[in-house]
Amino acid sequence: MKNDDYNMNDIVKHSNILFLVLDALRYDVAQEAFEEGTLIHLKKYLPSTGWEKRYSPATFTYPAHKAFFAGFLPTKTQEKTTPRLFAARFQGSESTTKNTFVFESSNLITALNQFDYHTICIGGVGFFNKKNAISQELPNLFNESHWSEIMGVTDYNSTQHQFELAAKILEQTQNPFCLFINVSAIHQPNYFYFRKEKKDDYHSHKAALLYVDSQLPILMESIQSKGNCFCIICSDHGTAYGEDGHWGHRNGHSTVLEVPYIHFKIEEA
Image (cartoon, rainbow, N blue to C red; front, side, top):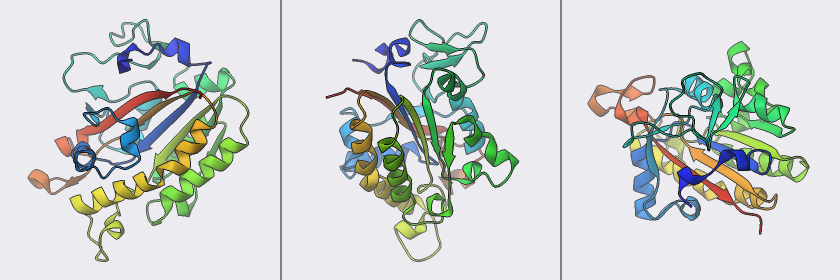
């Protein structure tokens, strides 16, 4: 089945949902790792050509996730209009199709709450740490949300901690679920996945992705044990490491705007 052939009206209310955001992951790094054959676990879910290159709707975490939850996922690079999987009802939307799940609330998470999904947020970067008003906004959409220092950007084992928590929660979850995880490991600082010196670069960025890949079975084995699941795996934005004088994100450089994307369905065995 082609990705765009999914009718999301047949999936919502009938399937679990996983939304896995690999925060700050660049498309070129993700695709290079795929072509090198080093994404041992992610490659099981990728097509033969690897990641789909898409454009992020924003250049940093907060606005990108606001857009995601309203249904504005990363858009295709070679097409004028990208059909939307989910959409808040909005008059004149050209990207809403017959296969789009349209909801009345302002965001998908609130809509799923109303359909008796158990919605779960496992945070990573600072916009999910709930330490101040802005970092409570996104987590508070969910039925339950979690964040701790060991799941944040400075912990070497952050992804392991995030995925182990997800598996524990899912083991106890009876309702259909929407599990959202903001994976923090690839976001700076990531030098410690490659070197001792406190210097992030393209190589440490890729090493962080390989670390995340190594932990993926913890999550996916748990997901697969719960039956049908529609999965979205993507980045929210990339990161520049000096290209054309650009560093970090919150800028419009291609290393920031071009992100890897995939969605697929796991069928109940």
